[in-house]
Image (cartoon, rainbow, N blue to C red):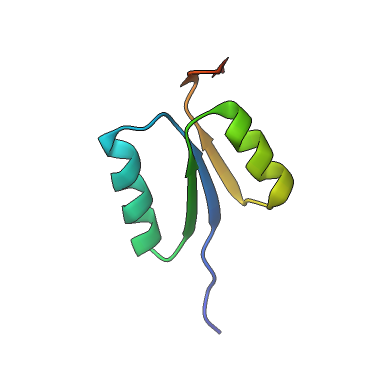
Amino acid sequence: MKEQGVNLLIVEEANSNSWLQKREIERWGHSVEWVECAWAALRRLRQRRFDLVLVDIYLPDCMG
């Protein structure tokens, strides 16, 4: 039986590291979505279930 990857949401402002993180995690066989602000993350969380959410504590529209 093939092991399925993790559904991951990354919430972080756009920078060069964001795209690198997304690409590398996808290479490991996981599904990655990336959004730049807290409000976009909340919208995605209402639409889809994620196994793991990584959140930057300093976002443009929310702290923490």
